[in-house]
Image 1: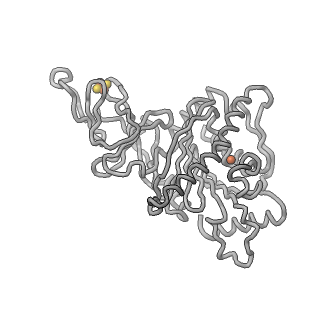
Image 2: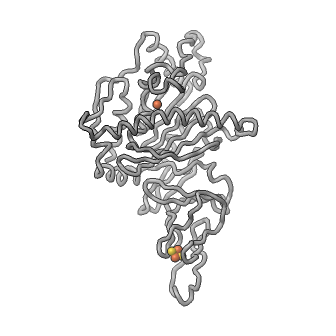
Image 3: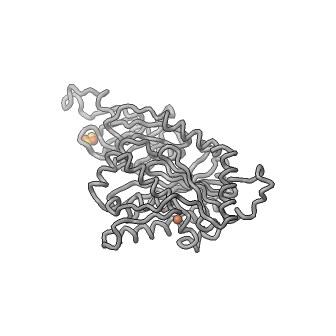
Length: 378
Ligand code: FES
Ligand SMILES: [Fe+2]
């Protein structure tokens, strides 16, 4: 997103506000409730969407040094992410190649060798099978090279660790996908950021409901009246697609104070929050001096894990700003919890028979576009 585009977007939103209008889609659309409740549909999403599109496994700053590792679940798979002793990032299935025990149970740490808790086969942080106790008699012909940890395609770019969560794919070309994002994120030094806080919360809502909550500003002044609502324009946001992704621009309540004669000096970062919905399961919410990273991990049609992180410029993560980042993380969490709680309530009412479909009004066109991308991928 370049500077001229930012200014044009502000002009559009400023103009709409002057006319007392919102940003409108052509028509009202609907979303059948089976999308959010049906197990077969859920299985198809896991198989066809989450296994075949690059997703963010973690922020690169979560593997801050050589030997660092983290474990987590992504696309239904137990993962071990490592940075080996040469600084290279790897994504493995966190499963021993002997008889399948969970290799690493710690959430994170620093190790160059992992020893299985069952029979102590050992694996290096680059995935190589190193040691097999009593190998000579027990496994006389073992091919160690063929028994390294099962690897997923991985790339480290824009400060993220991207994976293709498909154990059947040996290699994957991330370039076309990542070059689009690199161009889009030119206005933020993504690679220069690091995580200040990260936590995982569970929600009793379908993963798509949770992301849909980030795609419209119609609810801001109502659902967020006690948190960020008053700081944002009422029911005013614009959006555009880029590929399967969505860029939503949410003006802050200072928008009407803009001086139209001074357009070249409008400060886009100061005047807006931007929500990037990166297909399929990530939202990046930019704020004035940092961004929030929201990743959903579907567990069941009505259950989702949400990984919420506050990410700031690395040079601003200093001891005198500890309270600042902590405060920002809790504001994000409080705001998003307002959405997540409503989503869980929606989920619990979906099968009541009240609605056959959810309705997306002309303020909520991005929700329909998001669902269309999912339908396309299915
Ligand atoms: S299952 Fe891991 S060493 Fe046996
Ligand atoms: Fe919200």
